[in-house]
Length: 383
Image (cartoon, rainbow, N blue to C red; front, top):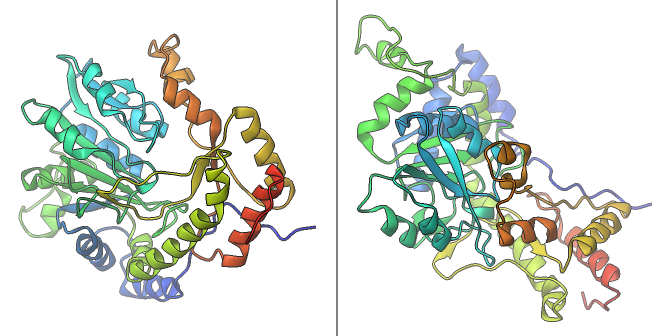
């Protein structure tokens, strides 16, 4: 029998319950309270932007962005086929059509040449996912859109704290959307945020997030009553969750430091397998500062992936795969993509392996994971 090593385990700083108790005692557990303001200030300090709003999830942040883009039925949104379905759903919900592009084989980010080939006179948005906290080539992507009326919505669900040429992801396009889901660090279980990089759109974003009403303006004394003024939904994060997240954000540097140690230990100890050509480790371009979101690698075939995951799981190690290609999903087929071939997306989705990665993971557990992988390949490990 082996001790279990889970794929992910939420991190607790030790102050979350204190903050939540104080939130309850202050008498405001709904959103837009003291902890919402603290949380938004802490996020702003980390990413260098004050024009942001907490949301109930990354999904709701993407929906707000979709509404802010003023899309009409039939407008097109270019996005990677290798990403979460929530990105496509946010734009489908406003009548837009996702156009799926292939990904770059090195970073698994959207392929910029594919983006250019996908553009039509109906293209209104490009949505890059910064896969596993590694920035896509934003310089080239923004160059594509500079002479066009095309918005860029960054999906930073895996990239909080990561940077591109020194600038925080989420602050490069028109909008950036973060996730603070349980599988993220920092986390509040369920939550997110949207960065509005055009300050002129901040007020409308606030209205959309407040059920389409100007309720926030009412509480600031800017109007004598509030009413419905736009479309929207109930996307304000509870102050209870903001309190939890605030405790996490205060220790963000500690979280990042520990995750870096684990990430680099994985890379160092797995390197011999990569040198033998048995696996391919992730590539980090020189202009990217990653956030150590997680550790993945590619094996040679889908069958090897299946056998390796079985081998790891049978020994108490919870490894995983990742996204299913959206163009091959039921939704993708319904949109007419059944016969479309995106070779890199289809290939990496069959071969990717993600390893246990969380703040409290200990070095000896990393070494056990790596030794188990070496055992699978029957290669002598010098750990």
